[in-house]
Image (cartoon, rainbow, N blue to C red; front, side):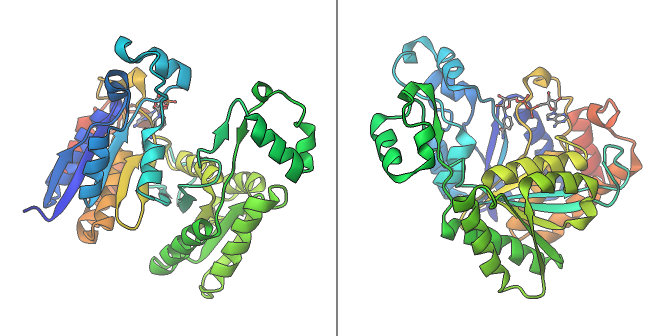
Length: 372
Ligand SMILES: NC(=O)c1ccc[n+]([C@@H]2O[C@H](COP(=O)([O-])OP(=O)(O)OC[C@H]3O[C@@H](n4cnc5c(N)ncnc54)[C@H](O)[C@@H]3O)[C@@H](O)[C@H]2O)c1
């Protein structure tokens, strides 16, 4: 029996291509693993009315970790229009598989390391080495949303919230409501994960990102909880930053930051900014990590315009595979993969289009594999 059981979820478009590339590297690293393919993505929505079928959920419950490529998502009405004729008008509503996966398996940490590899001409500045901890299951992504807003809800809000009086006379279909829900336990565990990571890897500072001066209830709770957690880590400096000011300072002086921890939406924003500072979507890797399962992926989507061309950069996915090996307790293999990626970038012989070259997705993977 193989040492590790890994669900393999290519999804749509370039997701299929970058996962093929990652597999070349994992095989070259001699990973003792069984890769079990799983169905996810747009075709399953169109044919079955479910982009994340129950059989894939069952598969994820049986594996140690998963690699996920990318999926195509469309707004609710466009999604309904693409359902197979037999499923149209049956009341099916498209739900993002990745958001569901994070919630179903309580993958509460979204870990996004952003490192400027030497020689990458896409680096914003040399030496950037940031790690973002984004809370992955709560906040504005909790999925508690209303459009139209039911009358009962508007009646209750009118009673309990003074500021709601501005909206209370509006008909339900004249506005929409998305709830930002942050729990004390959810805030505590993501902040603790960030501090524990800092302590384990010798990082010196954790910056807590918020907007507690305006969003007092939810961000106030996040910040207050973060301050309590920080007391358990006296050797690590703690810093607090408003999200709006932070994006400006992060760009101005990325070297003032080390580990950043944020509620879901702010984390989503800063992790894309950080990824862009180290080369953009071809380099942005990510881990969705819970207590029992972790799913690793590039941060990019299915890039339909490049689908089928084997042209995009697989390094984000290869670096996500490296993160998976760390999670699986294979640090030596993980380090070898990262060193191989770093050497290919520094040598500059094999470059995909985004790096200014013309190497294919699989050429890049073979180059990394040859350096292992
Ligand atoms: N996690 C996910 O699966 C995920 C994430 C984002 C978007 N999406 C979905 O993907 C689809 C396309 O979305 P989009 O076009 O806005 O974003 P995208 O990330 O798919 O691509 C945007 C552009 O970024 C560049 N790019 C992306 N990946 C690259 C790579 N590996 N190498 C080089 N260049 C790369 C390409 O120029 C591409 O056209 C949509 O349906 C969207 O909903 C899925």
